[in-house]
Length: 73
Image (cartoon, rainbow, N blue to C red; front, side):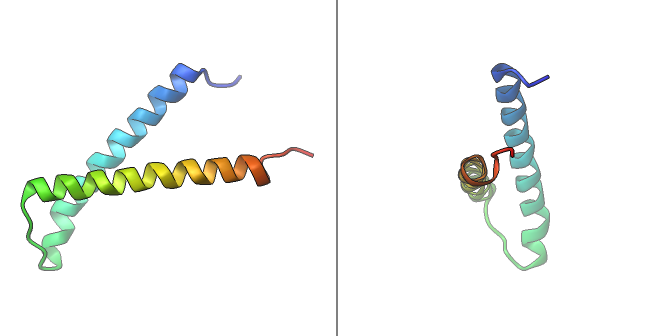
């Protein structure tokens, strides 16, 4: 059974929110280990940019897969 559009949207939004939280938390821990000390609002902005890049990457790969590799024999 395939997933409904509403369920797909809910899964995508949850995945993005969790990914952003993990990204922000890891930056707060890892950056200081490398001597990078920046304000929280900069960490938030960096996490948001990486989230946007991740969404675009995922979309492009999904479209490429559907175009080139998603065909069934």
